[in-house]
Every structure is written in structure tokens, then in C-alpha cells.
Amino acid sequence: MSTFVLKGNFCFSKNQTELTTKENAYLVCEEGVCKGVYEELPEKYKSLPCHDYGEKLIIPGLIDLHVHAPQYTFRGLGMDLELIDWLNTHTFKEEAKYANLDYAERAYEIFVDDLMKSATTRACIFGTIHNEATLKLMEMLEDRGVKGYVGKVNMDRNSPEELCEESDSLSAQKTIEWIEEARNRFHKIKPILTPRFIPTCSDELMKKLESIQEKYHLPVQSHLSENIGEIEWVQELCPTTKFYGEAYNKFGMFGNKYPAIMAHCVHSTEAELELIAKQNVFVAHCPQSNTNLSSGVAPIRKYFNKGIKMGLGSDVAGGFDLSIFRAMADALQVSKLRWRLLDTNFTPLKLEEAFYLATKGGGQFFGKVGSFEEGYEFDAVVLDDSSFRTMRKLSVKERIERLIYLANDTCVVDKYIAGENVK
Ligand code: GUN
Ligand code: FE
Image (cartoon, rainbow, N blue to C red):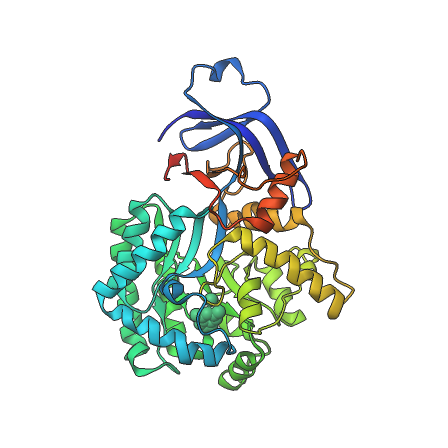
């Protein structure tokens, strides 16, 4: 791991509502960790190698808290359905193909290549039910220097035969084998428990995953309160629960002891939100997916007010775009529509808040990630926005604002993850 200095124009979140910008400044990386941003480089760092990026922008790497790698190759297709029909018509059929390792390898290469080109440095990724394909995905990401979590998906009911594990026992057994192998082989990419969602996971399976979590101390990722029909279905499947989140909480998979990410939370009730806040469950806000699948708009302002931990997710292929810049723009736009059309109590998000969600907010799930403050892991992306022609002289903050709305990640010219140049 290296020690060096980057020179350029920096922007990072001070907190949820404030950005810090520094022009022609220096960012010091020591053994993969940020040592601060300086307008004048301190004497003790002057002998370090310095990469001068001139006029370019440098921001913390973006965080994708929720993405499905096997869905990437059909992004942008078949979006005229709601969640359950979309899963049955398009998604499960595609994921079943990952039983074939050759297919999986070729498809995951496309996902990993495009992820590397993007501004995303860390992600929480769903694989499929297949151990071999999921391990291959982990290997590819590890080899490219990405840090994050990948989950072998569990599903043992309400799934098509070709994508349904034979029994809860077999699903649990395969999960243990996958964890053991992943722990031996990978260091940057870690396993995360991934019960797909309550409709596809029996109580027996959830119980077994709970013991696996106790044994291996793993975080968990899943889906929660995304779609009205889905929520009604969960109520039928779990008649004794008062709200959807209880169906995870019953099995210890709703924060508190082990970190949890729940994607969507579009229609969470007050009781569900109370528990999310109390047990530090992370909400992965996926505005583009929620728009495409007509799921609704999560009231993110309300969640901020409740102090809920949150980040952004692309949710490819519910979302069609892997770009977290795009997720920021989408989060801003849907919050404005929600405010105007649905509920004027919750004001639209601000630019600073969208940037926070994409960096420091989501980054919290990984520890000290998502900022250039001292002690944070050194994840940085260098952006060249010179192709966007204008008549104005823009500040660093304005250039970031414009990038959020205009960028498709093609501006990324260099990328560092925990101090390693991965571009
Ligand atoms: N709920 C269960 N599976 C999925 C999935 O693959 N995508 C989305 N958006 N929601 C889900
Ligand atoms: Fe999802």
C-alpha cells in the first residue's frame, strides 16, 4: 500500500448539509488512509510523490449500497411491469442462467468492466443462488481492487424451479460452503448474507441463516417494503407480524447486533421506521428503480429527520444505470415531485444531501469511508469535466453540481480504492 499526495480541486461532505471544497489543494494518502486536505502541503509531506491533476476535480469514491450484478446485462429492458411481474417475467429467468459458470463468467466480466469505469469504489452486491458463479464474481472484483460485499442469494420458495433451492437445508449448506471458501480466498470482497426477500425465503431457511449469522458474524442485505403488492403478500405469508421488517427482525436480521442494509423502504410504516432507526438498519434508497418499477417514492426527508442511516443504490436492473451520479440526480428529482404532488410536509432534498448519501452516508456501512477527512480510507475518483463547455466561470461546487446532473461516469480519469490506483 502506498503513500503519496494528490493535487487538484477537492469536494467532500463535511456533514449532511455542508460540502467542503478546496481549490488547488493537496490530499495526503498514508498507507491507504487519508491524512487530510491542505491548501499548503506541510513540510513533512513534501518529499512524497505528488500527482498533480491540475484543473480536475477529486471527490470521494461513490458508494452503491444495492446492486444486482447478474441483472446488469439486461439493464434498460423490460421495465413496463411492477416488481413481482418483473421478477417473474424477466429477472428470475436471467438469474437462472448463472447455473452455467461459463455464461456467468462472460456476463460478470461485462458488469465488472463497467463498474471499474464508473465513479463507484465500493458496493454491496447481490449475486445469484449459485455458489460457483458468485465466487467467480467475487474473484473478479477482488482482482480489480474493488472493496465491498457480495452475497450468494438464498431462495427456497415462491421461485421458478430453475431458480429455487431444493430445501432450506440445502440452501443453508451451500451458504456455509460459500462463506468458508470466500473467507479463505478474498480479503477486499467479503461475504454478506443475502436472503432475497421474505416471499422467497421460508421461516425454516431464515432460522438457519440466523444460526449462520451467529457463527460467522456476517452483515445482511435484503429488500424491504418496496411495492404495495409485495407488502400485502408478506402480510399473508407472515400473518403474525405487524409489519414487513418484523419478518426479518424475528430472525435477528434487522440490524442491532449485525449490520443490515434494506433496499427501498418506499412504503415503510411508522412502526417499521422506528425499528429501522433504533436498530441502525441502513436504508438503500434506489430512486431510479422505484420509478422504473412504479414502486413509489421513499420519503427520504422524513428518514433524515428520524436520523436513519442511508445511502444510494443503483438497484440495477430495476435501475437501468450503474451511475451513482445518476442516482443522486434521480434522488433529487423524485424528492421534488414527491413534495409537489404528494406531501408538502417533506421538503425536497438538497444537492449537499444527495452528495452526502452517495459518499459519507452510504460509506458509513463500510467503516470510515466516503470522506477525505483524516482517518478515512483513501477512496478517491478524479474527474475531468472539461468537455462540458460553458460561458461561465464555475466554482468547484458548481462543477460538482453540473457533474451530478450531466455525468454518465465517462468523466472518471483515475480511481483509488484504499490507496490503490485501480483504473
Ligand atoms: N425484490 C426481490 N428481488 C428483487 C430484485 O431483484 N430487485 C428488486 N428491485 N426488488 C427485489
Ligand atoms: Fe434490488
